[in-house]
Structures are given as structure tokens and as C-alpha cells.
Length: 466
Image 1 (tube, rainbow, N blue to C red):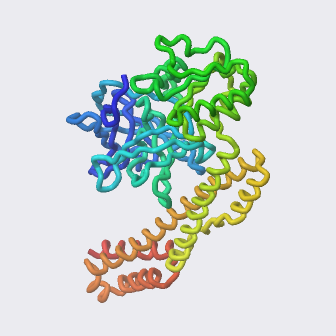
Image 2 (cartoon, rainbow, N blue to C red; image 1 turned 120 degrees about the vertical axis):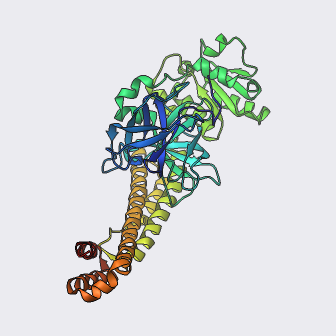
Image 3 (cartoon, helix red, strand yellow; image 1 turned 135 degrees about the vertical axis):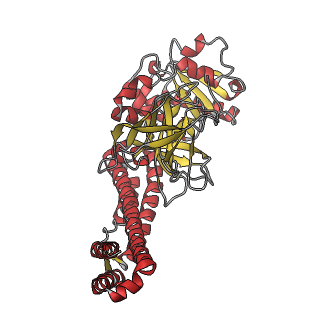
């Protein structure tokens, strides 16, 4: 039975023992929580699982039982937690492989200062991330998926099924994030394969379209013999039988229907594999409707992997549009990283090199628009993902280095003022160690490794002489 957003009993907030919120997770059964590996600071560490979908339920302690840490290119990043005691769970979540492009989803994370949770709606984009393992999410305006959402379930706004978990956000652009879809989760955690529901039948999808208040806004396009829609107890109010027509004739019929009913946003294409030219129909009629924002479901009498690839894969024109936006985002991230590099490099050495800001990539994309080829398009898409990934990772590393530098200065000052000023003046060894640490920290650019070692030597000397 479909549950309304906010009524899910399987939503989990994960805390570090001691209080800090680490992220979110999905209670798969009474003993198991699914989350991202990077949510857990130490795989040997015990964490606290809070069952926010069940007010009044006592938190449980949990430890990692399956661990797939992110590798060098960020693939993986999943963990299963085993609860020390069974958790209450009225109804398990339904895991389902997602459809792409425009599917509306929602999620709930626990960012800083919002421990009770923040709901965000988003639309699914195309495949992205390392090895195409992720799916892009574009959040609604004035909402942002950020730190505290990692591991949160991504839920289909129409069915309430769990389609994946949030894995990463892009700090340089509000609303841009990624999820690990169910099929990737099962690839890394095959033990969960038995929990994944079969895709709903075409008949069930049609019934969902023609549920209460829906039938007036949908049209069935019958493209071949033996359509599934004729088996419905309540036939569609708007139906176009185009069986035997050419693709051009079908296109004209669909456009006439759109002109007569401009408000109509939903189409059912039935028995597509029995059409005059199924692949061209899918490429030139059905897919453009989807990309124009219409809701479309497609029925095949017999499954065809080739047809499904055509239907699920956005057109070259659509991919070029998306690529333009992504290149702009990636170049903006690279420029921000370069500016951050200049600031940190003045203070600290060594620092990682900044990524190229992508002018050559942008020129290639412009050339691609004049003469688009699929191999070149795929290569540009891959380079854009890599530029965005490298920029984001380098920016984070620069932030970490800068934070470490500031922390070392604060640490040296705190120990010197708290317990070491007078003793350092009297003790030659303390005075020498303090002077060396201070000199290394404040001679720019600071050799961070040498300064860290010098501060550590000074602090140890203070403790030994207490």
C-alpha cells in the first residue's frame, strides 16, 4: 500500500555515539540499515540508529556488517549496518530500479542545525558519476541537498518506492546532487537482490495513469495488434488507433491530439513493438514527447532490450543541451577551485595542483554541436564528469589543508598560553621547540608537514615536563 511522504516508518537518522548527526539510512528489515560507507567514520565504530519514521521508538546501536568503501574513483561507498537489537518495522521499504529523466523524487536529510530533518523534492537526470554508477538529482528551487543527506533514501514521488540513496552533493551549485540507484547498490551488495521488487506491469502502470482524477488528461496511442489497454476494466476516454500507420502519420496524429487538448500531459503508447517501424517510432515520436516534459509510458508485447535502450536513452540533441549546462557547471567549479588554490598556496605548501578550467573542452562541445557524433559526445560527457569530479575533490582537499593549518596555529597558541609561556621562558628545550614551531607556522608558505611535526614535539615536551 502506498504511503504518503513523511509517513515512512523505515527512515533512519544515524548519529555518532556522543551526539553528532552523521547522515541517514534505510531500515531494510528489523536488523539491517543501508547507508553510505562515508557516513560511518570508522567501520569498527558503533553508531546510533534513530528511527525517525516511528516517533517514540527507542534508538538502537549498530555496527558495520557489510562494507564497500569508495575506491579511488569513488565507486562503491555503501555499507550495511547490523542492529544490536531488532527494530520495530511495520512495513518494509520497496526497493525498485528507477526510470530516468524527469522522474520526481523526494528525500529527507539531517543537515547541521536541522537535526529533525529537511525534506527536498528533486527530479532525476541521467547517469553520471564514477563509471556511470550514479544518477544526477536536480533539486527544487530554494532547497539544497547537502552534508547530512548522505545515505538518505531517494523515494519515487509517484509510488513511494525507494529508488536509491543520496551519495554526494556539489557545493558549488545549489540543488545539484547525486544518488546511488538500486541497481548499483545490488551490484555492490548482491545479498540485497532478493529485496528488489519487479518493475510494475504495463497494465498496472496504465491503471495508475487512469486512477482517480487522471483519465481525462491521458491518451492511449495504440500502435499495433493485441494492445494491453483493451484488457482494462475501464477503457481509456481518449484513444488513437494508429496501427499500420507510418511513423510520419503517427507523428501527425499525436500532434493533432496535442493541438486539440493542449493541457494533456500523459501518453500511453501501447504495443509499440508491433508498430510499422518500432525503433524509428521510439526515436522520433515517443522520446521527444518525454523530453518535452510529457509523462509517457510505453508497452511492449515482448521485451526488447534494443527498444528499451532507445526509449531510455535521451536523444543526442537533448544530451547536447544537458552537456552545455554541465560544462558550464564544471568550468565554474574549476575556476572556484583555482581561486581557492591561490589563497591556500600563499599560506601552505605543498598543495595539490588545480585542474584545467576546461576552455578546450568548451570549444570541443561547440564543435560537436555542428557535427554531433555519438563517440565524441560520450567522450565529452566523460571529460565533463571528470573535470567536475577533480575540481570538487581538489577544492575539498584544499579546504582540509587550510583547516589543518588554522588548527595547528590555534593549537600552538592554546598550549603556549595555557600552560607554557613562563615555562618556555625558563626551559631552553621548550623555548627552542616553541620558537621552531612558531617560525615554521608563520613563515609563508608554511611547510605543513614540518610545522605539524614541530608543534607535536613542543606539545609532547610540555606534557613530559609537567
